[in-house]
Length: 173
Image 1 (tube, rainbow, N blue to C red):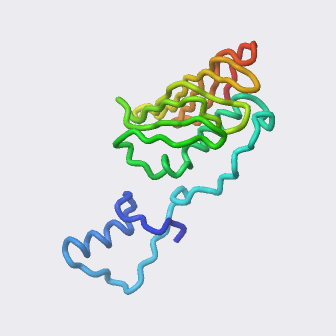
Image 2: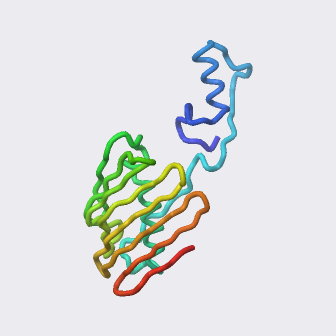
């Protein structure tokens, strides 16, 4: 209950044990109907669409946090096995490419606009060992600059540093 359509093989003991016992040993469950309880993290909460224009964000850190979420729910990315480079078109122009990297995932992007007025060009990575997602960007659009965004999944911290619209940026949460 609460899980997606198919969950076998994703490391959840309840379905994995019953299915493996049947497929490998031919052992049927002792009960006719099995209901597995799921961790709420199995099904992701609804994510609203990203705002269409950069002016709708409180600050540049909020823009990058939204890009991080938007990337993670893009079907091409969400369903990828990261065995080869994959490119998709960004919602308002440009492209984003992701694939296998030396320590996890590697990214490159050219004039990618997830929201109007904020095009990013650059590279990035997600390090599986440290849980750090990082984007090194040149930004153009409503303002221009060079920004580095870091999302540390191990502790939930976010930061963006650099120059944006002629101002020095150093934001974190």
